[in-house]
Image (cartoon, rainbow, N blue to C red; front, side, top):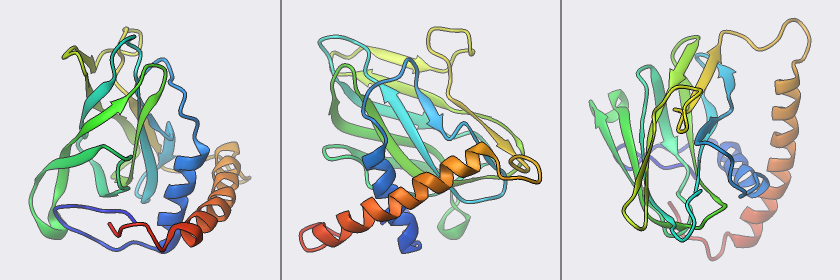
Length: 202
């Protein structure tokens, strides 16, 4: 189940199952940079996104991550964070009019060579490039600000929201998304059935 602490909403069970599946399918190995996925998505559509932040420093773990949300990128709800992590958010407005502006995850201990992975449902308002600001804090107190240009050592994560994907035919991205969706429903369905008796409700 997805959660929005300041304004809880119940979403379709399929979305929750897909989120569990993606968490299982995606590898835990770290990439070179912080990133928001998918890199290309549809404007005006509610979709599942992931923030992945690599722990690159030896001898330290990632203990805190702060993501500043770009204007026009509307986060609807969040998947529960990985075990050990706790989430808080800053927003403007309230209720159904609330707009999430910043999200903070704390309490984790992501080791060197792995990604800290967080998921959320969101809707880009229009077709454009969205740039996120991400601050990563290590257990030794050092900080990495992922807010630079694409060619910098710590580039800011970006996504491209498009008015449509591909032409008249089925795009590669759509095929991949459908494949992950099918696998997600299978894997997530078994996980939910097997663990429903001992998993706490969000």
